[in-house]
Every structure is written in structure tokens, then in C-alpha cells.
Image (tube, rainbow, N blue to C red; front, side, top):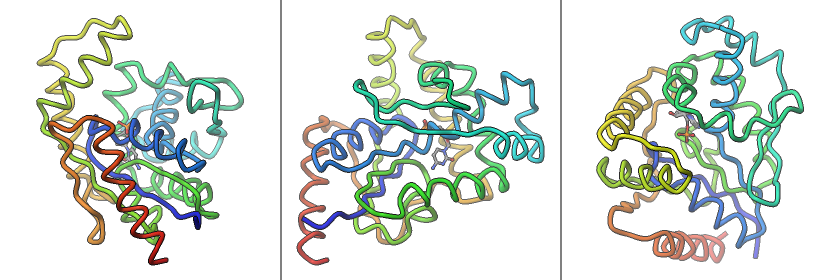
Amino acid sequence: MKKISIAIDGPASSGKSTVAKILAKDYGYIYIDTGSMYRALTYMALKEKIDVNNEEDLDDLLKRISIALKQGKSGQQIFVDKKEVTEEIRIPDVTNNVSNVSAHKKVRTTMVKLQKNYGKHGGVVMDGRDIGTVVLPNAQVKIFLVASVFERAQRRFKENQMKGILTDFNTLKDEIQRRDFLDSTRKISPLVQAEDAILLDTTGLNIAEVVDEIKKLVSEKSKIS
Ligand code: DC
């Protein structure tokens, strides 16, 4: 089967990364979690006490560091200047600041260049907010995953519970809503469904059902192209 590009966009905790990882594994494609790249920059900015509202300083930082994604045995790993930060980029401080960092035009221009480069040979499943619209506008399959805020907060709550992290459900729900708002109202490439993307509401669906739905679309597209 011809190697294609699959773009998966959608709001926070809509299941993008879980589904994207499975698809990449099953097709033998590269998986790129673009959110982790914005998170790595946010982590470094917080570490170096750089103001998350200062576009120039953030862009200088991004140009100074090297962000690398690698496929490890237990999933995708992320490195900044060769130091692994896979776990660090998931801390609440990073989660609560990443939407500010990713709203800056200069930051996005530099990130998009890196991401386009990862996707240039096809055979890639990339997830994020602007993959179908900006990073891989020619992707053969574009999916826009959504789910109710309540269900997304529930999924995050269970994930945290399994990791032994105690969180308040309503706080999680508020944080998800806040990020939805910031990500979809920012001026530069906000979270929107690409015109040619397929909308998939995963509320009430399990992971296998979502993966199956997308695989049907992939096999249709692979027959055509
Ligand atoms: O997918 P995630 O929750 O790890 O993404 C973290 C943040 O990064 C998200 O709140 C918005 C931003 N992001 C973005 O602006 N563009 C992308 N392609 C991916 C993520």
C-alpha cells in the first residue's frame, strides 16, 4: 500500500495521540506529536524563566535549542539538546502555559518548518491543532477528532489516576475548556477543522472503534491515490 500522510487535529484530550500512535504502529509509519514540541519549548522557557508572553525571547530560545523526537520502546521520546524531557513536558505548569507559548507567530513559523520537514516523505501520522490546515495541507487523510468536554475531562482524570496523580475533576474540566478557548481563538492558525477534514465525534466511542473508522477512510483514500 502506498505510504500516505495522515493529519489528526482536534482539541485537548480528544484522543488524538492515542489513536495516532496505534495507526502509526499498525501502518509502520512515523508518529509525530506536534503538541510535545510546543510543550518542550514551554518547559525550557519556564526553566530559563523566560516570559511566556515574550515572542522575541521565546523565538530566540527555540532557535537556540534543538528539539528531537525519537521512537523509543515505550513510545515517542522527546529530547531537548539531547536531554530527555518526555516526562517533564507533561507537568501541570507546562500544560497551563503551553497555549500562551504556542500562540506566537514567530514560534509557530519556526515550529511549522520543523514539522513540515518531519512530514516531507509521507508515511507519517501527525497530530496537533493545525496539521490539516497548515503543516500538512496536502495530507491524503485529514481527521478532526472531537468529544464532549465532560468526556475529555473524564479520560484525563482516569489517565491521571492510573499514573497515581490525584486531580480534581472540575479543575481538569476548567483547564480543558480554557485551553480549548485559547487554542481556537488565537489569531495565528487557530484550531479549526480543515475544509477537507472528516469530523469524528468520539464521545461514547472506544479507542478501537475510532481506529477502525479512520482505517476505513485510509483504505478508501489509498485505493483512490
Ligand atoms: O496536544 P497537546 O495538548 O499536547 O498540545 C499542547 C498545546 O500545544 C495545545 O494546547 C496547543 C498547542 N499546539 C498547537 O498550537 N499546535 C499544534 N500543532 C499542536 C499543539
